[in-house]
Amino acid sequence: MIYTSYFANLRNIPETIFRVSIARYSDKFPDIARYEPLMPSAQLLYKVKHGIYNQYKYVKEFNSYLYGNLDAEKVAEDLNSLAGGRDVVLLCYEKPENFCHRQLVAKWLVDNCIRCQEYGQPELSSQEWLAKLGFTDEELHKTQICSDCL
Image (tube, rainbow, N blue to C red; front, side):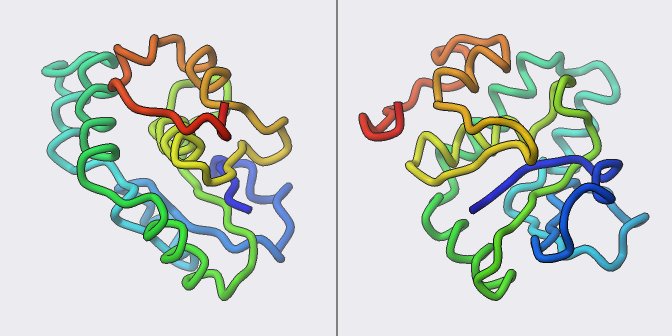
């Protein structure tokens, strides 16, 4: 299983779950594995931090990257390999009630029929992720969702 969570919640995540940072800057956590393909680019983060991009443009660009450049099955295989077959938790900084790119990653995985949920919370369908994110599917990035995943 792939989970998502945030660094401040690490104390509640069992050691049996393999921890992977998908935050571009996570130097405070040198003992946590990093998986760069799921990190927002430094250029994208710069645009947001300097007001060049708003959240909508950030979402659009990051989703374009996820859906256009990555193979979800390969990502899941990579994570499984990194974790030695254990469950994985993808970590970033924001609390679950705040927007974070890991929510986009989770929806992308679910859209590709790979189970992913926020640690300690119910598993969400693709449409439930949309509602949580507050965007329409067209706004996020028009994608085909397999019927098994709805």
